[in-house]
Length: 108
Image 1 (tube, rainbow, N blue to C red):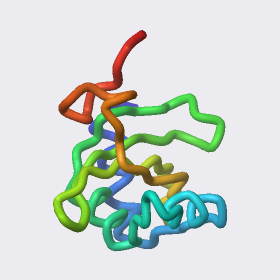
Image 2: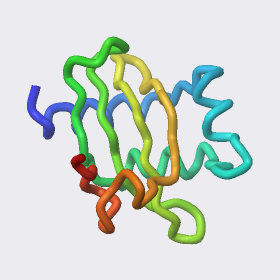
Image 3: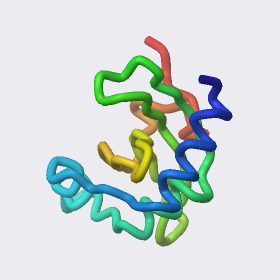
Image 4: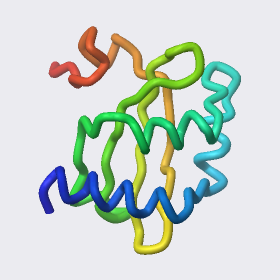
Protein backbone atom coordinates (compact mmCIF):
# COMPACT_ATOMS: atom_id res chain seq x y z
CA UNK A 1 0.00 0.00 0.00
CA UNK A 2 1.30 3.42 -0.90
CA UNK A 3 1.64 6.24 1.58
CA UNK A 4 -1.40 7.86 -0.01
CA UNK A 5 -3.29 4.58 0.50
CA UNK A 6 -2.51 4.51 4.21
CA UNK A 7 -3.38 8.22 4.47
CA UNK A 8 -6.83 7.51 3.01
CA UNK A 9 -7.33 4.57 5.39
CA UNK A 10 -6.34 6.78 8.33
CA UNK A 11 -8.92 9.44 7.38
CA UNK A 12 -11.71 6.86 6.87
CA UNK A 13 -10.96 5.06 10.15
CA UNK A 14 -10.65 8.31 12.13
CA UNK A 15 -14.04 9.44 10.82
CA UNK A 16 -15.56 6.36 12.45
CA UNK A 17 -13.83 6.21 15.84
CA UNK A 18 -10.56 6.83 17.65
CA UNK A 19 -9.57 4.03 20.01
CA UNK A 20 -7.19 4.88 22.85
CA UNK A 21 -5.85 1.64 24.40
CA UNK A 22 -4.79 1.99 28.07
CA UNK A 23 -1.06 2.21 27.22
CA UNK A 24 -1.74 5.11 24.84
CA UNK A 25 -3.76 6.97 27.48
CA UNK A 26 -0.91 6.58 29.97
CA UNK A 27 1.63 7.89 27.47
CA UNK A 28 -0.30 10.92 26.22
CA UNK A 29 -1.36 11.91 29.73
CA UNK A 30 2.23 12.13 31.04
CA UNK A 31 2.78 15.51 32.72
CA UNK A 32 5.40 16.54 30.17
CA UNK A 33 2.98 15.76 27.31
CA UNK A 34 -0.64 16.29 28.40
CA UNK A 35 -1.87 15.77 24.84
CA UNK A 36 -5.65 15.92 24.55
CA UNK A 37 -7.84 13.62 22.45
CA UNK A 38 -8.80 16.72 20.46
CA UNK A 39 -5.16 17.38 19.61
CA UNK A 40 -4.75 13.75 18.54
CA UNK A 41 -7.84 14.00 16.32
CA UNK A 42 -6.67 17.30 14.79
CA UNK A 43 -3.24 15.85 14.05
CA UNK A 44 -4.77 12.83 12.33
CA UNK A 45 -7.39 14.79 10.39
CA UNK A 46 -5.29 17.80 9.36
CA UNK A 47 -1.69 16.71 9.79
CA UNK A 48 0.90 15.47 7.35
CA UNK A 49 1.86 11.80 7.10
CA UNK A 50 5.63 11.74 7.64
CA UNK A 51 6.37 8.02 8.15
CA UNK A 52 4.72 4.80 7.03
CA UNK A 53 5.11 1.49 8.88
CA UNK A 54 3.68 -1.24 6.61
CA UNK A 55 5.41 -4.07 8.50
CA UNK A 56 4.50 -3.03 12.07
CA UNK A 57 3.56 -5.97 14.31
CA UNK A 58 0.36 -4.15 15.37
CA UNK A 59 -0.74 -3.81 11.76
CA UNK A 60 0.03 -1.25 9.09
CA UNK A 61 0.68 1.99 10.91
CA UNK A 62 1.92 5.48 10.28
CA UNK A 63 3.10 8.71 11.87
CA UNK A 64 1.14 11.90 11.21
CA UNK A 65 2.67 15.23 12.24
CA UNK A 66 0.43 18.13 13.16
CA UNK A 67 -0.16 20.98 15.56
CA UNK A 68 -2.04 21.04 18.80
CA UNK A 69 -3.04 23.65 21.35
CA UNK A 70 -0.78 26.67 21.38
CA UNK A 71 0.48 25.61 17.92
CA UNK A 72 2.73 22.98 19.52
CA UNK A 73 4.00 20.23 17.24
CA UNK A 74 2.63 16.72 17.80
CA UNK A 75 3.35 13.28 16.39
CA UNK A 76 0.75 10.49 16.61
CA UNK A 77 1.62 6.84 16.01
CA UNK A 78 -1.55 5.14 14.81
CA UNK A 79 -2.86 2.09 13.03
CA UNK A 80 -6.08 2.25 11.00
CA UNK A 81 -8.49 -0.68 11.23
CA UNK A 82 -11.77 -1.26 9.42
CA UNK A 83 -14.03 0.37 12.04
CA UNK A 84 -11.63 2.54 14.06
CA UNK A 85 -8.13 3.92 14.27
CA UNK A 86 -5.95 2.64 17.10
CA UNK A 87 -3.83 5.33 18.71
CA UNK A 88 -0.55 3.73 19.72
CA UNK A 89 0.95 6.87 21.25
CA UNK A 90 1.29 10.60 20.77
CA UNK A 91 4.24 12.75 21.76
CA UNK A 92 5.90 16.11 21.35
CA UNK A 93 8.80 15.61 18.91
CA UNK A 94 12.25 16.63 20.04
CA UNK A 95 15.13 18.02 18.01
CA UNK A 96 17.25 15.37 19.72
CA UNK A 97 15.62 12.80 17.40
CA UNK A 98 14.19 14.99 14.62
CA UNK A 99 15.63 17.62 12.29
CA UNK A 100 14.57 21.21 12.95
CA UNK A 101 11.48 20.75 10.74
CA UNK A 102 10.33 18.04 13.20
CA UNK A 103 9.26 15.97 10.17
CA UNK A 104 12.57 14.37 9.24
CA UNK A 105 14.10 11.76 11.54
CA UNK A 106 17.80 12.32 12.27
CA UNK A 107 20.13 9.61 11.07
CA UNK A 108 23.05 8.52 13.18
